[in-house]
Amino acid sequence: MIRLTEVRLSSDTEQAVLEVLRSGILAQGPKVAEFEAAFGSLVSAPYALGVSSGTSGLIAALQAMRLNPGDEVITTPFTFVATINAAIMAGATVRFADIAEPDFTLDPLALGETITNRTRVIMPVHLYGCPADMPAIAALADKSGCALIEDAAQAHGAKIAGQNVGSWGLAVYSFYATKNIAMGEGGVVTTSDAAQADTLRLLRNQGMRSRYDYEIVGQNYRMTEIQAAIGLSQLHLMDHWISKRRQNAAGLRSRLGDYGELILPADGANRRHVYHQFTIRVKESGGLTRDRLAEVMSTLGVETAVYYPRLLSAYGLYRDHPNVVGGDTPRAEAAAREVLSIPVHQWLEDRDLDLIADAIGQGIRACRRQ
Image (cartoon, rainbow, N blue to C red; front, side):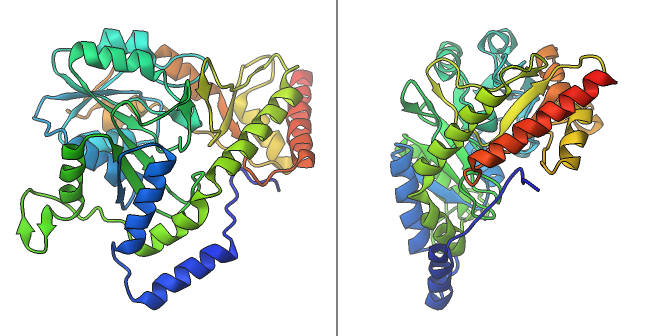
């Protein structure tokens, strides 16, 4: 089976974890500080704050905005649930704007129509590793006086016109077990604002500047030394792994470009996609559907997944939630019906790409005959 995601940890990682265990320092300490400095340097962020997960990072970033009841956060309904859970946990009201085509990220035109006098934060998601149109989004944020928080959980190393994602405001990255840098759990919040960084340090540490010196109401969002050690053992490989994923993405595009039933992901203008996922769109045609193609590929030994099968606004929990405002998002609805992620990870070889493309071809032809 060609796996959709494959995590391989080296002997260097094992040794780094062993050194932490032998040190007796397991909670946030020198390894976390070393990881923060290294990751901040990689993404050109003056301040990088390690946290326990991408989700806790999003909550902390929103809490740093000091939102009041009724303040609104605009984001996309086509994302992982952590994006809006964090906003609700921070006391905000979530409002949805539609996505752009073909890149699945927040559409600046739809965003402009969604901003109200209650909007405090705009939170674009760099979905699947593809950067959102940050120059246009940042211009809207500046015009409307809104803060920007980039959900970069899937976009370590992504760039726009050579500029790292995360450069337009606060940004949050995730190191969950299947991310391009995988630590099991863990996250980082980056910022160029010293005051914001200071607030984030307090928020992640129960509001303490020093032990029992409480300044604000905080939480335990701390990263562990083991998480940091696992991450540090991979950071020097990040650019190489991105290059390999981009190479594999190009290989898949060249093999699949003749199938008119598929819409394939690409970088977009001046954007560096890091391909956390290679997500195709399967246009229904005759007997061909996304789910049927996935079934055939599974029987042929290629794992796939749907990220994400329903819009967050379609779940009763959120549709009826007092802190969630729906919206007209037809492009996001269409994407949820059609998206299918196929393997693109850095461990694939050319023969694997051949097998993936062959499985897709067999699936399409089988559906055509039905």
